[in-house]
Length: 497
Image (tube, helix red, strand yellow):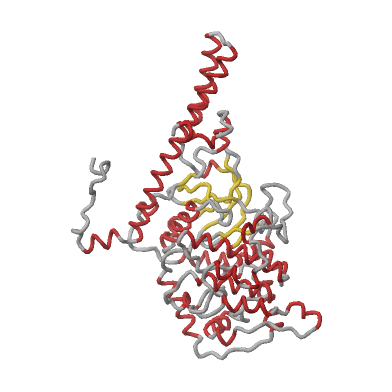
């Protein structure tokens, strides 16, 4: 009753120190938010269902009255109507399970799990089903990252971020069923293109800025942006994905690992290479290791210095990463890439000396020389923290972006539109039945084997960490409602309020 009357439900000033620390911990804050979202979603769906049911019953009564049915005919149709309502109720109560999805093909492989193209059997929804092992995530301290990814995906409806359709679990695995983005990741497009024309580079980087800005509006910093994190949809526009590191703090072990790698190269000499040599080396590395970003030796080519050093940072670290991506669009290689991981780390350590404007000498290559305005845009992003651009307004005001249609970027025709045969076309993803494509994942499989060898933690695996993980954006599914004859479910709540 105190809660209903607005009275106090907690001791405001009498908490002991350990109680205050516990209440302010990230885990408690997240669970309180998840609880609020759960009840909001639960009652919203419940009220929506009640409204839809009232509308269906009203339509049934109108239809049967208009046809002047006999009592026997009415009883028969009413029995059929009740049967359809029971089907819908059963679907609402059913727990989501992996066997409710038909697996079509594998489209991704990582150190902690796999991604499949799947179709939900009862609604025919196509999705990308991400399957991860609970035990592995616990052992590698990655649970928090997966929970944050789930929270980000459920918190947004923007077209710039990949949508989450469902999240569910079983005793061994957790699953994220996300919208399927059929054009593959942007790395594939970039590898095929090499260097982008300036107008095309501007188109894609503007969309990437818009996507990252949506993430920032939710209060998250990505910190590990690279072309692989952007997917190309069926219309050629980009969507941001992979939010596993967009948390309040990086894993301390990872921070220490990054700092150690930087310290190891502090005395290394910088190797000065020409633009054409660096571009050639990078292309050959990519040709040899298509999954370079996922490999054991993959270097953080796009990560800001303050993140690498474990220093305090702001949203601008994502703008550094996008500056590195823009540089690669226009030059054909990231600004600090080297022939070896050690050379890349050395370049990152000495970034102010290594960052140089790409220049070409051969007449056929002169078209790749960056314009003054493009180079200025790059150096406003790859810069010291105090000088670096850090807001979308900063970006919009720069002359390089003045011709961009910021009001509605997704209405602008894309330079490349995927050629798709159907909604389940996987042509822009690797074929996991092909030995040639699977050879690209040798390093990824080695990484997975190394993860499997990591010693299990001594503390017991607690099931409670996955509380609040389950999510269903569509409730029983749009097509389930259609089966009940409810074509316009958008006004469901209007029948209640």
